[in-house]
Length: 537
Image (cartoon, rainbow, N blue to C red; front, side):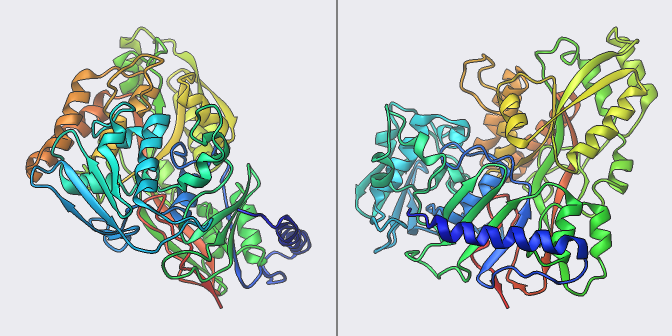
C-alpha cells in the first residue's frame, strides 16, 4: 500500500493540538475529530505484529478482523451461525472430511491483484509452514508442513478444498476457519517481499496485504494504528474514510479526551470514570458480554508453584467480591471456568472465595507455613494492575510476598510465551466460537518440551497433562451434543480444581461513544468489533 505520510502527519498533528488545547477545559466540547474519521482511545500496546499467521493479541485481532477477509465469518447477531465472506457457498462430503468452497467471482485485493482459490490455499499452507502461535487452530485437523499442500488446495481459480484427518463436526471446522490465522493474504504481493524462506513474515508484520473493508495504513507501536477504507472492497464500502486507534492506557485520560471531543470512543474506562460520564447527554455507553476470560497463572517450572496445595491455596487468596464491587463493576462478572458464559457447555460454578485461613493451612501442608516470595508479570493497564495489587495484599495476609513486575503488553506477553515468568495475569479471548477453542488452550499440552512448538496456555505454564489432553481431544470428536457438554463440564471442573490458573472474571466489554457516532457495535469475540459499518453525523 502507498502511504500518504504527509496527510497522515497532518491528521495526527491536528489531533495532538486539539488534545493539548482542550485538556484544561475537560467537560466542554472544544475540539472535534475529523467528520470522515473515527478516533478511538484504546490500550493497543499488546500488538507485536500484524501478520495474520502470527498475530495472536487482543488488539491485533480487532485490526485483522476489520482488514482481512476469510472464507466465512461469525454472525455477530447470532454467534451460533456463520455468514459468507469470500466463499459464495460450501459443501461437506458424506464422510465429513472434505470441505469444498466456491469463491465469489470478480473480487480483488486492496493491491488490485485478483483473489483466487490459490491465494486461499497458499494462505493456509503458509500459516501451517510458518507454525507461529495460532497455527494450532489449523494443524489440529491433521495438517502438517509436509501434507498441507495436498490437504489445503485450489482445484481451479474459484474452488478451494480443505481436507481434515477425521470427521469433525462441520460447525467446528467452519468456526475455526473464521479465525484470523485463516485470513486470506495476497500471495503475489507477499511473495515479492519474502526473504530467506520466511514467506514474507518479516515484511507482513508491519505491512498489509489483504482485501477486507478496511486496510491497515500505518502502525507505530505504542502510539497509533490507522485503518483506511478499502476502495476495492467487494462488499459495501466502509462509511468512514479512516479509523484511528490512539494508544491511551489511562482510563481518566480517555474520559477527559472523550468529554473534550478529542476522541469519539473510549475503550478502557474503569468503573469510576464510567460513573462520571453516566449522566452526560453528549455520550452514551454501550456494552456486550465478551468471550474473554481474565485469569492469572502459575508457571509449573517453579518448584513451589508446582505443588498442588499451593495451586489450591492461591485460589483462596483472591478477594473476588471486593474486585467485583470495585475494579470490574460494570465491566465484568466473577467467573471461575475456562469456557465463557454463552458458549456450549460453559459451567457457571464459581466455588472459590477469599479464605485466608484455609490458604494458610494449605500452604502449611506444602511445607510453606512461613510463606515464600514470588513475582507476577503485569501489563500496565487497568483493571489488571488493580487486580494484581489486590491479590498482592491478600496474599501478604498468608505470608506470600508477591512482587509485581510491570510492563507493556508486548513485553509481558513475550516473557509469558517464553515460559520465563513465575506468575502472569492477563486475559484470553476465544479464537473461534466453539468450546474446543478454550479447552485446547487451557487443558491441552501434547508436548511439554521447551522446544516442542506447542503454544497452548497449558504449555506456557509448563503444565504436563497427557490425560486432560486426551480428554480435550475426545470432546471435540464427540458427535452427541449432550455427551460433549458432559465432557466439557468434567474438563472445566478438573482444570478449575487442579489447574495452574486462577480464573477471575468474564469481561463485559464497554465502550463510551460520542453521540454523533452511529452504528458502533461490540461483537462477541475480540476480532468481531467491526468498525467499517460506523458512521458519523
